[in-house]
Image (cartoon, protein in one colour):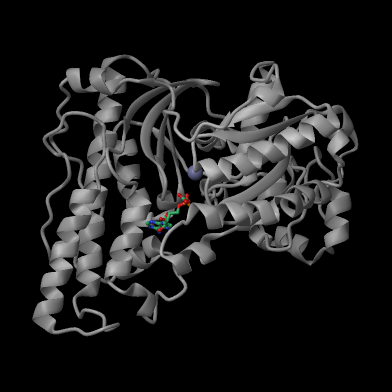
Length: 451
Ligand code: KG4
Ligand code: ZN
């Protein structure tokens, strides 16, 4: 059995730093990494640590039961802005004491997209068990937490409403302070929970609902460099996957659209079909994916006609289409990031000695995209930080942690919790897109996608 928190593991020099409640679905590797704070990039988990797996659930809980937990700040976070009902309790050191998540993704997959009324009902049905689940896992009562945080903006109105109302109910019942949280800020700040990332840093969010480039200058202090002018990349990956009927592909039936495209693209020729890189002539950091989607749709229609495919039959060139589609989307992302980095350099926004880029969102788990963005980061000496996949997608931990960031600064507490209203639309920080455009930054020579 490994040593208690704060001490050195007896068999290695790694310090046991994390208090972490056991989660049955957590893999053994993840658990030992957390307990010893082994970076994700270091895949060599010492052999003796793998034994931790065999320790009973209850023992791990005891092991994780840090005596001074009562004297620390604890925030309960609640997330309901889209299709995940999430809750978590974190402490001020960034340890996750308890977390629970109910995902609606499978339900929405059947509907072919999110139906807000269905999403709302599912949040309503699950919020209580999710919040209670997080508290139970942390072995805490509501009275034990220091503050309650919840996503209040932006998101689907019907979904936000459930989380905000539930949080207000808990606040009233417990008398605890209420910290309203901006969902995008939470995505951006989550990385600071696992790694030491000083402000200011660059943030790139890519998911089914978001696409933005921003500079995080401090808590509640962001510069928005660019965002999507139409759709988010994840949605477009999903739509193209649907158009390619990938649900009927033997290798893809259980995958999300984006994952399916990535898997097939890896076996295809990314130069087989030529697409136009979106917005290549616009010298800003904004994004557009609809035109690229329509070009891909037209190609699929043409190839289906040529091959004479019927109902659920899949095109013979599906891998090449997936690869070419993914390549062009990636070139677009790289170009926007390239400009954002140059803009920050020109305006002296990010200090030369500490350059970090936080990449998050469901699409960031695409390794082809990640490696391509890594190439841009490497070119300019940025440290690329990607939270682990479970924290890249929507969850309660990111809300709890963001609440904690505000709490630690003694800011962000709602004066009148009852008066807090949810806001479906709310941009992140100060819009710098005009200034980016006026800076007239060229992104040539292009940075190549690594092979
Ligand atoms: O952050 P996320 O879980 O939640 C929402 O934005 O709702 O992102 C989900 C999106 C989906 O559209 C999914 O297709 C996309 O992320 N995604 C991917 C990959 N994995 C998930 N897109 C491209 N490549 C992937 N490997
Ligand atoms: Zn999100």
